[in-house]
Length: 537
Image (tube, rainbow, N blue to C red; front, top):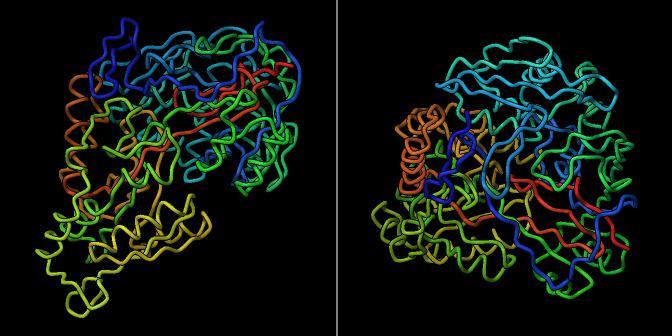
């Protein structure tokens, strides 16, 4: 049933390890605040600041990290991922069996678990959930991709459900541990997607939505009678907190001031420059690297200039990742050394082909026929080597420094800040030379999601299959860890050496909290987990 799985570029032999899923990585605590003595206590309300409101908190529809911090607390999942070992363990499913070719997954559900409205968490409700996610389509951008090639859902009996795929889907078991496939009461399937975004849904997790006001915040309240927390947490009964109040605070300086003054208790939105203000006994910090695809510039290869591999490679070699992380980002952010974050299963360090080398970049552009103009920007046939990137993620200073570095090799990068919707539109219609972003997921299949020519994302805007696509498809169907490692390594190296990807840095998430906040941590995919959180007075 469970299989051993590689981590950090090596094959880890896990005696009870699970198949092909999320990465294992320890959280690292920083700051000097001591932990209060004594056992966790129930009660109290924790106020948490988020920086962006994406106008939706439905766990099956959200993709933004701040929205996920809310949504994750309201749903339980079939399985859970051990952050330390990488093992997939039972949660709502007390047992599971994977067909040898990864086309069939059978789950045996635990007895007695219910949704917040009292409905039983049974096999029929699992079927209703997964069919509803498929029906959401692009609105469930993550969940629907995890259910690609879904062929059947068989309700064997009240406690047994089999999920069948038309093609091998080695990633699916990991997907069942995510919030995107978290379970909602069957009644929620009849609610419109728009209303569900506004919090009109019933979950299976330790907290329920009391209220949500877009651009202001949300309030979750403890669910009474909840007693099936995952084994990866410190307890299994009701949550300790009475409530979690999320407030939207867009400005970084305001988040800093609010935490210092006690108006909020915790946030992930403290800027790197302000982090030093919380290095004392009154506060604590916990950080964890986000698994998945690192922050990238995704080159639109449907444009003539970026269809040239030499141009893409030159841009890749013209970026000084060490300077970016050392001068602009936090101590836990690292330069990218692969398309994958170092906390992703099957990661291998490819830093040897991602070194900063402006001389090699210049040679590549010379070979491609781009010569330096009077203003320092290279030209060919009367056209400037100029590109636009439309972005919405902060910090903008990262792209501004990339802009400066690329100018040194004769490349002009024009930056346009836009809304998330506008960035999506510009990427979809191919009007932007580059898009910019990352995607968190603790399974190497994230490479296929982002880069495959026939994926919904297709971040490179390619129209024809290449050998890269064959590799990405192959790794998604392999259940043997050693075999999958070899294919993932080959795919990742090809993505870098052929400049399908221009990695920049590896994102980490840092919780900064008042010292009285205890037990607020991360699940294995670096999503915030409030279940064990408590307030020490």
